[in-house]
Each structure stands twice: as C-alpha cells, then as structure tokens.
Length: 607
Image 1 (cartoon, rainbow, N blue to C red):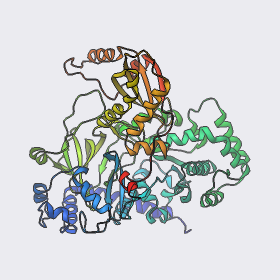
Image 2: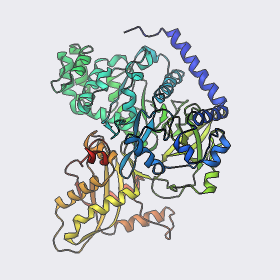
Image 3: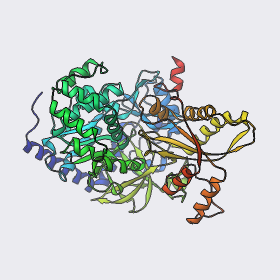
Image 4: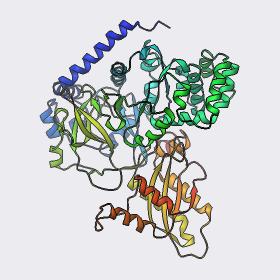
C-alpha cells in the first residue's frame, strides 16, 4: 500500500478545503442558480420535465412558476417504470445506476430514490470536507486512527435488475470507499473486509476485535447513528470474554467463518497477554461508566448523529464516555447529501449544518408549528398555489424560522419534499446554517425506522382483533420509544382496556397483539427487528382504568386547553412517561420477530 501523505501535504489539502467552503458559502446564490441551470440543461428532454411543460427553460423563474413541489407518491409510477426495467429518459438523461432505499416509507415499503454514477463523486466530495473542518478544532488527528463501526445492510435487485440498497451500503461497496487513496483521516481500525461482511454478528465481532487490538492508536470513535454506537458497546458488554480470549491467544473465534474477514483480522491480531488482561480487568468492573475512555484512553471525541430522534441517546453516550464531546459532522439522506457542521464541538442541542450549495438545488417551505404534545409536525400532502409561491431560496431564509426542505437533484428529483423540518440558526457568509428539528409526521423512532401516527393507528387496529373473543376493547392508547431500559431500544404501547367478558385475556393473546402490531408496521421497522437487530421486541403495557383521564388532567394542569385536548399518540416528556409507568398492571413482549424479506413485497411476489 502506498504511503500516506506527509503532514505538510495534509495541511495544504486542509487549506484548500477550507478555502472551498469559504468560496461556496460566499457565492451561495450564484452557485445555486448555476446548479439549477446545469441540472435542467442536462435533463432538458426528459419525459418528466416535458410532461410538466418546462420546454427547455433553465432559469429559476420559469422553473418555480411551472414545476410543482412534489412528494414521493407523485413520482411513484415513474419510479416503478424504471424499477421494472424501462430505460427511457423518464426522470434523468443519464442512466439510473441504482436505487437508494430511503428509511422513509410509502405504503409500508421503503421509498426508492434514483441515483446516477456521478453522484458517488459528489457524496465523496462532501465526506472530504469533514476532517479538514474537524482538524481546526482537534489537532493531530492524522497521527492516529478512527474506530468506526460501519455496516452494510441487505440489498435487493429490482425486477429490471437495478440494485436497491441503503445509501451507505452503496457508498461502502463503491470504489470511492474500497479503493480510497491513502489518507490519514480515513485510516480506520476496521479493515474493509470486516465492514463489507454481510453477517452483522461477524462484522461487529471482527470490528470490535480490531478496535481493541489497536486501542492506543484510536483518537476518535463513532458509528453513523448514536444507536449504532451504543449497540457496539452493548455487544462488548456481552462478548468481552470471547474477545479477550482471542487477544490473549492471537486467534479468532471459530464463529467467524468468513475467510476474507478472518484473513483481514489476522493481519492485525497478535497474541497480547497484557492487553487481554487490561481489557478483562476493565470489563469485569461493576460499573461501565467511562468504559470508552478507559479502554481507548486517547479518544478525543465520539462521532455520531445525535440530532433529531437520536438525541434520546445522549445520556447513555455521556455515561459510557465520561462526557466526551459528541460530534455530528454531516447532514445527508438518500435523496441528496446536504451539508456539514462547521462548529463540530458545539453542544448536541446547538448542532447547525451549513448546506453546501454545490450539492443540489435547495428550496424551503415555511412551517407553522402545531403546539401538540407529540414530537411530530404534520404537513399537508400537496401544496396549493399560495403555498407553492411561498417557497424560498437558500439565501432568503430567515433566522429563527422553521422550514421543510425541498430539493432538486442531478439524479432526477425536481422540487422533491424531503420531509425534514429545519430551523435557521444563522449564516456562514451567505449560506444558512440549520438545526435539524424532526422528520414530519414521525411519532416513533429507535434507529433508522420512522413510524407515523396513521401507521401506528392501523397496527393497533389490526392487533386488537385478538381481544374480541374475550369481549375486551382498547379504550385509549399511546406509545413511547424506550431507549433506556433496553438496548437496543424498543416500542412501548400503553393500553387502557374495557373488559366485559367473564374470561380473563390470557398472556399469550397479548403476545399475539404485540406480534400483530409489529407485522403491521413498515418494512424498515421489520428489517430493524428481524435482520439488523437494531430494534428490540415491542412491548404492550396494560394500564389501570382511568389512567388516560389522569394524563388529560396533567396536560391541562400544564396549560393545555380542555376543549382542544386529544390523547397524544406518542409521548416523550419524562413526567408523562413516569405517570403512565406508575399505572401499569401487566406487560407483554412480542414472542418472535416479525416477517421480513429484502426488496419490495410486489417484487417478491414476482419471483
């Protein structure tokens, strides 16, 4: 392998990156106009733009006047045609190279986002900005390694033969990641083969083993989401005796059967009795507080997403790390990579992402907040003409205002509503910086799953049919994403019952209710349960009669209007959760994982 660049080359590269950020944020509006014109020029003759009558216009004014802001459902028929093998220029003049499966769903199935080959270079460019920004705040990061727990997920092929997979799986399997140039900032403790192993146990075990073997070299640790990093620590808690045995003997556990993984690990693993004794001594202690800084003493920060629903994991991360800085470096989705955090050592509650104007064309729909008890914001499905005209450009957003993000991409999305709600925190030159507030309509989330109120309502409706033979009914319910009592976290449903039958409802029937609820939830949730093991079994807690009246009394005592009060379908305010838990009379867990297979239901029916 060629040598990594010398430190003066690294310094020069960092300077160029920071200069690039300075330049694009200063000329944000000019660049946005240019990006839009470039996208529309390249795709002038595609069917979708012709259908709407854009007629080759590439200027912003005509684009805004003619093209509607859309949701996934508006282009689903076009996506289906491409997925089924139609190669005509429907959305984009360049061939669609694959679909990126979004964690958002439509009809219970993952959304498919079209992408093209050149997008990989654009995504790689955003990654290249992260460490030069970070090195301004934390010196000498090039002198050690990053211990990142990175994983690929299941993928499928569409009926037309295109890969359909999560955006990170696409990136890790691409030459941009696998054949990346030597760079001290992408020097990870995990060899590529351990990241690219599709068996989640073997991948986690081998990455943890490599991380422990190189513990003194580790300067930063992380995963994509906070939930993923906590899962890694919990894995260590469970498996450290096996890991210590491997370090002591210089061998790798026989459960690791992937030959390329074994080979990659054996290049790093050497018998080390002292290290094994050290890890064993630390892991055997009663308290795991600060375990990260105890085992990896040179760690300077944890690099994970802790914004949005991931903020629920902050106390656990603080506990395991003795309060190391939690750094959120970038903001991205399957639709488009958006921006970076230019002040990475800020508090998690203050994280603001600067949108990089070269990544796509961005517009913003002002959001009026409903003051509800839930953590979701409802948004209209389609926009009327007035709302359509209210869309503002990147440089015209106002500080303090909340907006829904709308994006036009090089890969064939035009004025697409991403569904993220952002608040303007400030500006870097002329480019706004945004706090991520939430996904619209999402009420429950543990990992990358997103469950909305309608879906939850339908799942409960399906589940309660099990109670009918016992003349029992659910009179009220709410839900809670519990990430503290179990790792991985799990969904909790609180049910208040009205039982008229003389036969008590057996525990097995409530367990059936749990499983039916899970079977009724979307494919991202079911994948998290069945394949990724990133979500724990769903729990139903039966509360005593009158509990929801007490919940209403409590909400009214906090200032809710008695006329407008309706039971929240999801709660996260700690005193409310405590109130509900104090009224629990029995609880039940899902007895097994819900069914899940890769790909969309309709594809599997075709096989």
